[in-house]
Image 1 (cartoon, rainbow, N blue to C red):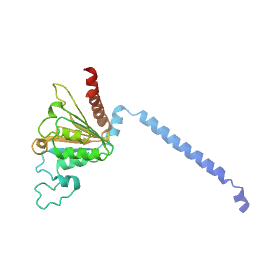
Image 2 (image 1 turned 135 degrees about the horizontal axis):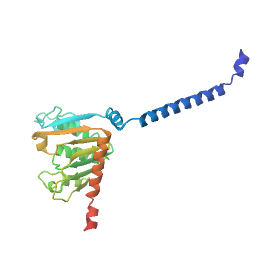
Image 3 (image 1 turned 60 degrees about the vertical axis):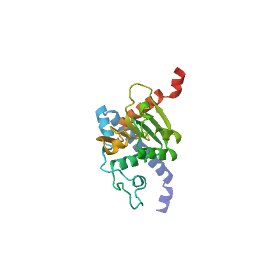
Image 4 (image 1 turned 90 degrees about the horizontal axis):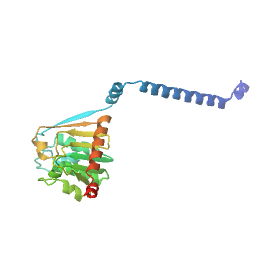
Length: 227
């Protein structure tokens, strides 16, 4: 029995096992790629959508959320007059604060301090922040654009008699915030507004490409070159 065990080639068995494992994995990858190539565009879209998620927020908020509650989740002020419950604004701010690498903001009007402060906080933490807005709205009452610029955030705007009327944000090129919602106090507490937050790959890609197109179009260096 001992002699039989000594004559058994364990190294050969290991080599055979390794080869079999490689063949099984290669076969699996091949079959999977063939299956994916046979999918129709509609099937591919359905498969992609099965992995996507969406969140919907509606405004106006009944109460204005406490700023400290929004950013810290608590408030230590005894006589705070603001809401300490979740609101659409608090949810939106926290979605923005989940950005890790980049935040591309393309919004017609920006004068909501809570959203502006969240944007500045991200910039200070190292997130690359870019802002596109409408030229006529930059000087509107309460505009946060100059505050952005003082903090070193990149801002570009159109120069047109028509509006840059978009209201969307791309987070890390993986999530989209889009809807009717301007970044204004009136939109938070007065107007009927909607916001959809989605990670659908194809939709996010389209909006990200639109942002890049406008970012290049509104490059001030190109305007100087033309003039």
